[in-house]
Image (cartoon, rainbow, N blue to C red; front, side, top):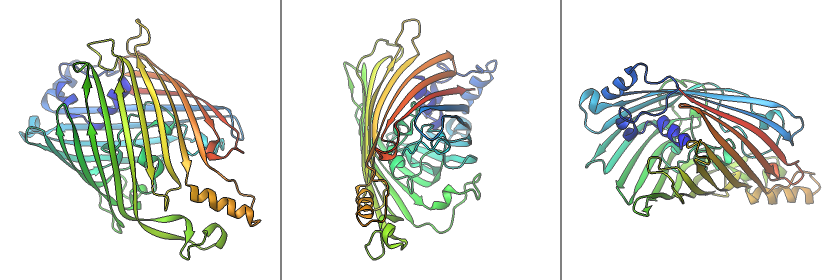
Amino acid sequence: MLGLALAMLLRGDLARAESAATHPMPWLTGTWGGHRTALLDKGIDLQLVYVTESAYNAAGGVRQMVDYADQVAFGTTLDLERLVGLHDAMIQITYTSRAGRNLVEDAQLGSFQLVQEVYGRGQTVRLTQMWFEQMYLDRTVSWRWGRMSVGGDFATFPCDFQNLTFCGSQPGNIAGGYIFNWPISQWGSRVKVAREGLGYAQVGVFDQNQQYLGFDNKLWPVWYHGSTGVLVPVEIAWQPTFRGGWLAGSYKVGGWYSSGQQPDAVSDGFGNPFAISGQPPAMRQGLYGAYVSFQQQITRSSADNPNKGLRVFFNAAIADAVTATTDRQIAAGFWYTGPFRSRPNDVVAFAIGTTRQNRRITDAASLQNALGLGPVPVKDSEYVLELDYTFEATPGFLIRPNIQYIHSPGGSSATRDVVVLGLKTIVSF
């Protein structure tokens, strides 16, 4: 579908860049009289994608209002084989600019996850990608290093939906204190071994430093002092095709370990709940988690469009209960591309998911109330549904109205359920 194609464009997919001269991606501004495809032939792929997300809370929160957030991503993929003769090598450089407001905060919806996934990590301009990749052994092995995001390579998932529950790499959604998704980048490296028709295995190493979230030197690939450790994610994927290659699937299993530090979710240095003792939380080292991410094409009604028909997905991630505020997230849903014969590139999508608060925090809140130190809310899980329709207004311009329903926002049954009417647009210039 086009949403996934745009995500591939932003990742600088080499295979897509190589075939773009004969099968160009949808650009709103076209090929610039052939100049753009001429640049592609020379190894220069220019990217400019503008995403907007508007949201109105028809129910829930303390006030009804509309908020707007957007992101501009601009960058380039350089095919070094075509440019300088370096075989099977490429460079990706991407900057992002985010702006706008957050409806969860402004309307006090109380939800764990954003209803505008494009918001966050500072409404500013940042260096999001600056990495080099070299492939070996007829592209069986690839090595990438530079400024990267963990979610760009591990537990990757497209941001077709507007609620963050169904967008991007899940580990960063529940363990965002030290796993940084787009648009944050950090110094890292990844080695991947792939076998066509079977799948791949990969491992990465990323620098752990909270300064990547800040604003100092945000435009430059600096190395920040004061790193606390390294993050090591691993992933194995099986990528089968059924019915003679007609129905493609992707089944990814992975996990991570970090030697960095994070505050304990509940306890102080003496093992007591810091919400009761008033002491600072203990600092813990050795953070970990695991995930699965499955996608499968169920039906396909076109030889030209591999996504036309029904695709389903299932994602689940769990983080350690020592430091994670939300320790698990589960999501499932589907896309149906080409719902009408006259609209072959339109997409109907539906997803349902849940995010759970760490049970240790729930137990600590219950203890506070039992000791007469409350009342404090006792939270558990929030549940989210989203229904989308993607309308291709013209090649390079997608309009995606959506409706979101959030039950027990923030895991609290005392918080009013939320209904959000959203609108997402994606423009690829």
